[in-house]
Image (cartoon, rainbow, N blue to C red; front, side):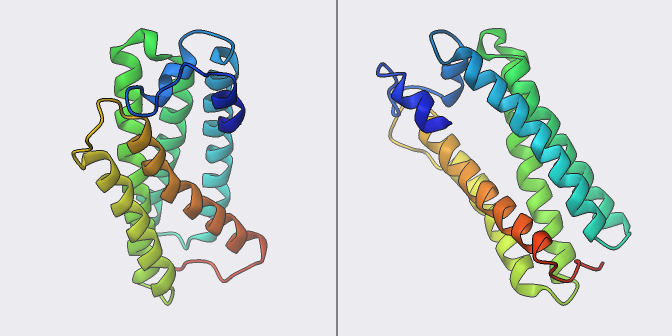
Amino acid sequence: VLLLIIANSPWFNWGEEYISVFGVAGRTTWLFNNCLIITGILSLIFAAGLGKSLAPSKLSKMSMTSLILSSLTLSAMGILPRTTYLPHNLASMASFTFTALSLFLVGIVAITTSQRVWGALSLTAGILTIVFQIVPWPWSGGAISQLLSYLPWSLWMIGSGLKLLVGVEPINA
């Protein structure tokens, strides 16, 4: 969908814009904002499935709470487009924060059990999510860092989803 949005936005400049500018004006507004909302909903459903694969513990509950908050704030970015300024910026910051936190917590849950490789991958994805946001990039916009930050999370969700689909042992805490 992002490729479709980019193809319909020849004015977009990766070095000077933020990705959320797609949700402000033009032919991509409706599609972009609704995709954020739908992605948040799908992430929420994913969180419910992943939560069932975790053994009940305080840390597992914290990791799923963080993933649920990440999902809700992702949808909030579509409900509150960039033109709402502060609410959108708060939703965006919260989404990146809760995403990284959920990756860290799931990583710790996995490492404290027999899934050390998956735990290390989860922690790495969490670290990359943060690093790509805080690195002082040479461009004025945040689109590249935003895309790079969500890439580890997206790959992690695909990997986690595949693990759930093929019936890999649950992460016991």
